[in-house]
Image (tube, rainbow, N blue to C red):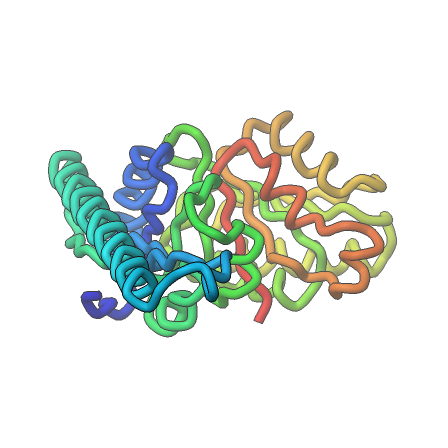
Length: 284
């Protein structure tokens, strides 16, 4: 695997059906952040599981022959996966070049799970881009839980975002997101709607006012809204649709695991039903 260049955008190409939107999104993000694009295709090595105990059924010669066949099958399967990965990465680089990507692109290929790569990615990447459907033994929720890097989940098509909903819950991760948005070139020139779902009391009003002030002081055009509603996910998505906002942003998994188990995770719900690109800042 090639070394990851510091401050790169890492695009996870484990969503072949989302290839075009992943690359279009990556080109846009790279142009805003002035970062190189690391195109990562990661798939675990093929290992045939010996689910059947053949002892007592085979002669030593037959057993050795069978093991050699298994090893050869594994080798050929891994070789096929590696070739397919190289072809996919080459096509991705060609697409970026043909669509006038001004930032450099470079291929990254590993024969392991995406989760196994996240620690290495987190140390050097500026942002991770992924599709919704992953062809690997993991889920979006697992990726977000294991990462400490901002993650942008694409939707079915790409258009340049001009506005975004920032889901504010007054938790530490969300305060870090407000700080990140106030400094990031990615959201510069966007209109940001800071939306909090909760009781209309002094504490919530003061919290959302403080977040609003931080963004306006950074020169960002924004609006604020406090919604008194029980269903947080429904309220956020309804507000986003009614105001035609191009992107969703939130902290990720800010609740305790016990509360998630009792009430369900708003992050996980939004990951399943979001209708626009969704930027998440994982919990540290």
